[in-house]
Length: 631
Image (cartoon, rainbow, N blue to C red; front, side, top):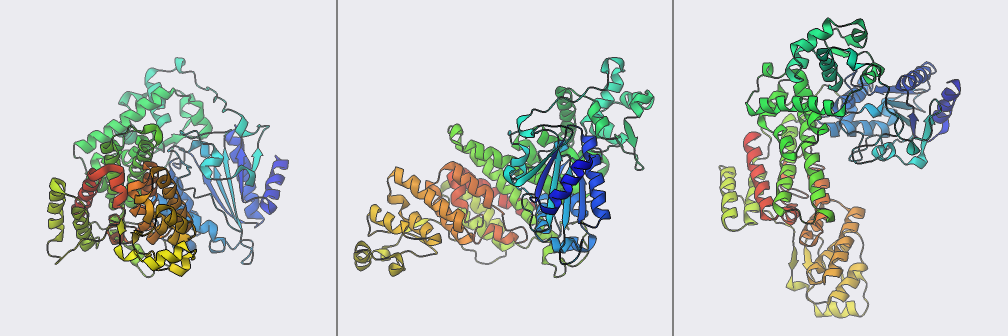
C-alpha cells in the first residue's frame, strides 16, 4: 500500500489530470483513497473533495451525487457558480469550478491553487451515469486533478467502458491497479461472493432483504411498506430476526435503514429477476397513485417521490410512461418537497433523454421503416419537456437577480404563480406555426393561437428559414465575372448572410465551385442555396458540407441557415441537430425558446422533416398546453 500511496503522490505532482483506480475489493480501495486524501489535507498539498458513490449514503443516483459534489465546494464560492436548478446546471457549475480552480481553492497558496477530486465507486452508480451526453468530469484545467475509482471494467447498457463514459482518453489517463488486478479493459467482472445462505432463512426475511437490497437510498419503515411494497411480516421478520441479519443493517438518527456498508450490501446476492420484480412494484405503485390523482403529501411516501423516476429509468420504461412525470400532478407533488425544482427537472430530463434516444434510433438507417407518426410523437415529447423546463426556470428567476452570484447558495425554489413572461412570444409562435400549415390542421392551431393572442394586439407570423429564390440575384455581369474566375470576395453581394438564396443564374457545377471557395457561414449559405438544383448524390454531399461548416463555425445565425436545409437533411442528422440545439442556451431566456434566433419556430423545418405536419401540430399543442399550465 505504501508503494501505491507514493505512486499517487507522484501522479498528483506531475501526472495527467485524470486517473482511474481499479480494484475488485471496494473496501480496500476506499480505505486507500481515504488515507491518501487525509494525507493530502494534512500536508496542505491541495483542496480535497471526496465524493462517495453508494446507495448506503444515498449518493448512487446522479442527482444526489451532484448535489453532494456541488455542496462540498467551499460555501463562500458556490454562489460564484450560479444557482443550479437542474442536474445539467449542477454539472455545468461543477465544470466551471474545475476550469477555475483559483475560485474554489487557495491550497497550498493563492499563486498555486490545487484541487483534488475523488469520486469513489462509480460501479455503484445506479441510474446510468456517468454518460457521454454531458461528461462533467471530462475537462480539468490547470490545478485540477480527478480520480475516479471503480471495479474491474464495468460497462453501461450500451456497452461503453468507463473511459468512454467519462470522455477520458486512455492515453491521457493514469491507471492504478490494486491488489494485483490486471488491466480492466481486458478482464471481465468477477461474480460477487455469496455470503448469505437464503435456504437457511425464513421466506419473510428473504423478502425483506430482497426489498432492502433493491432500494437506491436509505429508507424508513413507511417507505418499505408504502413505496416498496414490503408487507408487515417482512418487517417483523427482520426486527425479530437473528443477529446475523441485524449486523448487516444500520438505523440512522432519522429512523432510516441502510446497509452497514457496501460490502454488507454486496453480500446479499440477488437474482436480477427479483430486483426487476421489486422495481416493477415500486413503479406500479407510483403510476397508480398518479392515475388516481393523488397529489397531497400524505399520499406519497418520500422514497417514492424521490426515486420513482430513477427506477423507471433503470427498468427502461416507455417514453409515454416517463412523460407522465412531466405533468402538472407530478410537479405539484415535487413542489411539496425540499429541492422540488431540481427533483422535478431531473425527472423531466429523464423523459427528454429517453425521447431523444428513441428518436435518434428511429431515424437511424437500421430503422428506415419507422413510421413518421412515431417520430412525430417523440419530437413532441422533446418539445414539451424543453418548454416545461424553460417556463419553470423563467418563473424561478434567480438569474435575473443582480446579486445571485454573490449571495450564499440556497437550493432553488419556484413560485408557480409568477408569470413566465412569454405571453406575446407564445402567441407569435402559435401564429407562426398556424401559417406554416394548411387545411384542418391550420384551423386547429389557429384556435389555439386566437386564445393566446387575446388582449395582446396585432400578432404577425415570424419568418421560418427556407431556401428562397431571389430574382435580384440573377446578375449577368456578376455571372460573367464568376465564370472568368473572380474570387468570392469580389462578388460579396451574391449571397445574403440572412437569407438563403437560390442562384438562378448559375449552373449547379458553377455554383458548387463558388460554394467550395467560401468559408464559415458564407460557405453554409452557398451550399444551402444550391440544394434544390442538385442531383441527389451531389445534394447529400452538399448537406454534409453545410453540417460540417455548422459544426466548425456554428452560432444561432448559422443554425437558422442549417434549419433551412431541413427538407434535404438525413433524418439522423435532423434528429441530432434538434436534440442538441432545442433549449440549449435558453435556460434563463424562455421567450427566446419560442421565437427568435435558434428558437422553436426557427427549428420548425426540422420538426416537419422528422415528423411531418403532425410534428408541427403537436409542437403547437405543447406550446398551448404549457402556456395554460405554466403561464
